[in-house]
Structures are given as C-alpha cells and as structure tokens.
Image (cartoon, rainbow, N blue to C red; front, side, top):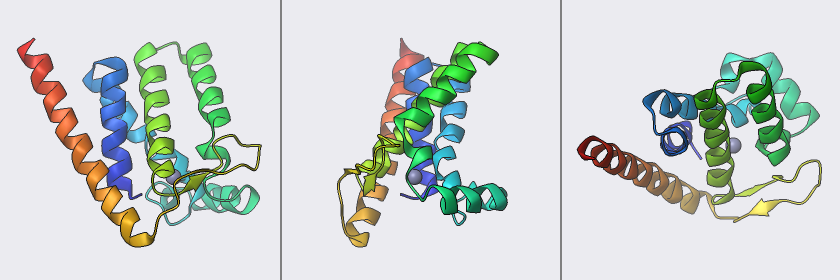
Length: 151
Ligand SMILES: [Zn+2]
C-alpha cells in the first residue's frame, strides 16, 4: 500500500483512538513508520542506513509490522513519555498500517513466528484496494469531524 493511504488511514485511526487533532497527526505519522524496513518507502528514504539494515536483517513486513513491535513501542511510550494522546495515536497508526498491509498482502504480524497472515492479491487489485482504502478513510474522517463539530 502506498504512503498516502498509510498516512490517511493512520490519521483516521489516530483520530478515532484519541478524538483529537493531535492524535490524528500522530497517527498519520505513525502510519508511515512500519515501512521504515523498506529503503524505497517514504520514511525509509530518510533513514537509508537504518532502512537497509532492517530489510537486510529482518526482511520487509516482518518485525516492524508485528504486534511485538506495536506492543514494545506502546509500552515504551506509556512508560517513558506518559502522554496518552501520543501513546494511543501512535498505537492506532501502527495497527492501521499493519491492517492495511494485510488486506493487500501477507505480513509476519506474529513475528518472530514465521507465519504470514493476510490476503494475497495481484498488483492490479492491490492498487485498487489501496485507492479504495484511502478514499474510504478520507470519507470516514470527514464524516467523523463533521459529526464531532455538530455534536
Ligand atoms: Zn508496510
């Protein structure tokens, strides 16, 4: 899935988890983080050494796409930063990324187990699903914000 879809679904997840604009922004950025294991991804290009090391050492869609990773990040944020909006926004953004990758391919979400979970689709369908997810997330976000403003 492309970075735009990961960002938008992360924004939506962060907003839903925190009911705040700050949480939405945090969720959007966190939605890009798992692909730090891919040197050609949006975030991976900014940290090429880390990105190449992660991909070479663990592979793509492995440790940074796992519940273990989400749990460790959430634990560290909860323990050392203690800002709920940040913790919940990041956690939601990371989970949104993993869920989105699982509807366009297989992910080692249970890393270190080698089991891959997800729906394997063709590149053509992956692009269609990517577009659909992006626009559904935008639509849902607009609906939620309008609902919150009117409430
Ligand atoms: Zn990914």
